[in-house]
Image 1 (cartoon, helix red, strand yellow):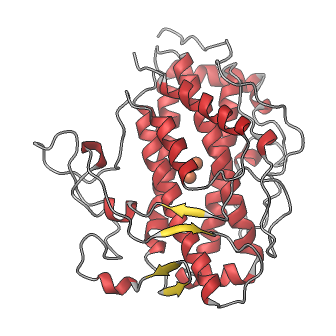
Image 2 (cartoon, protein in one colour):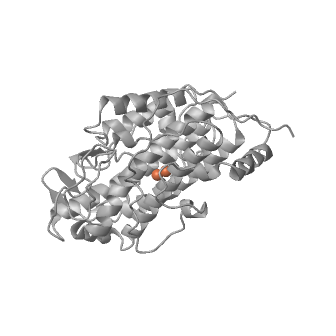
Image 3 (cartoon, helix red, strand yellow):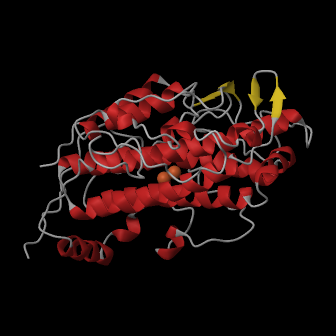
Length: 376
Ligand SMILES: [Fe+2]
Ligand SMILES: [Fe+2]
């Protein structure tokens, strides 16, 4: 079998700042310890630049693994896709860490989430851990193939919540004024598909609302419950985005190991989405000025809204002439601006409110390079 050529040149794209203080890895407040990617590599959880452990002998092992996957090569386009995904995972990890800190340390938020499921905080901690592993793995792989990893530390400038439980550190993302797209609730219950241009209404209007407590709220109050419900729907919104992003970009990659990485991590995003879809259905009825969460039981018999219809309804797929199929939707055309669409969706939600022009320029460059990738 012909050995693959491992790309040695650096990918085009923005130069990102060198690591200085790392304020990600301080999340260690899980009530139940989990396996850790970093621990599995035998390195400390506070390592600042992931991937160093892959140098030396581990790099040879990686070359062997690549060789076994077939005679394809890691292209510049593959690298650009991996770099965009590494950035996306750093953003995900940042927002999930904020949720974790408050789910653990803020009594009103914790109580509000527990109304949906008593295990909510465990799931939040585990989702956070998974995102950390995704970002670290992608950057370690990039380093191992001689490509440039992604570091967004220079953009950790946004303020933290002032509520009890939140660390006072700079953030990449802003969860304080979100417009949450809840159309996925109806999209996954519909036989229509965005792949054919179909559009879907919002299930619940969540516009310019906090998904984390901005300051301490009374435990058990409607205000606290509305924040917890907003977070619960945002969990599903974020993870259904990852569920579509990975297969959409997988259609553009060339190397089989890179494809394996996208399919593997993408599957983890699907798993997260399925859990959050189920939990959001437990959001209790609550109304506060600015947002109203309905009685979920009132949708019984409404096939586009019923709370327990959480399995993906078969829908149009590939061709309307073929039988309907239960699938992820959307999976965008490989000719489309997949990464730019994901980035614009996040930006439109308010997740980056307050970020600098430099941040948007960096992210746009990463997205454009990924979207320029072509499968041969
Ligand atoms: Fe992820
Ligand atoms: Fe995710």
